[in-house]
Image (cartoon, rainbow, N blue to C red; front, side, top):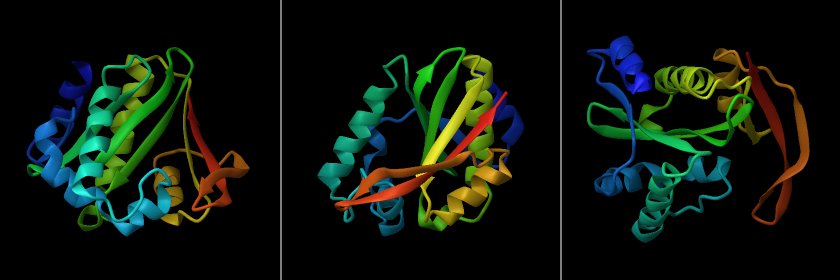
Length: 178
């Protein structure tokens, strides 16, 4: 696969890999996803995350890789799961939405910016996309900073776009176009 070769060559020796998820990832996956900060920014993940819920989410992500309009990867650092990154709503030769999260001990180390750049490259090369975008809560300052660092530009605000704990919240829309 072109993507694996590009990622391996660029980061050889660093101990960082993007790969498809496996059910054997459950324990490490559960450890990372059971995080208040992640659930604060991703409305679909409710804290605390039980092992059973983590298993259900993991199985859903594994199934997503069988769909033509989704592709998801685990970010692995020295055999530890650091986070998840993927593309969804893929419309070949047009657009896709990017999503991600990273565990607390891996934040602020440049890991997600490297992964985001690689997934963006994957979208533009493999799917011939013209637009890759991300929606995030306007309160998620870390993701705004990350996206801007990776050449995504704030396009606007989607008013009352997210329903979180019974409240309608605004999202920023950050695309990167080719």
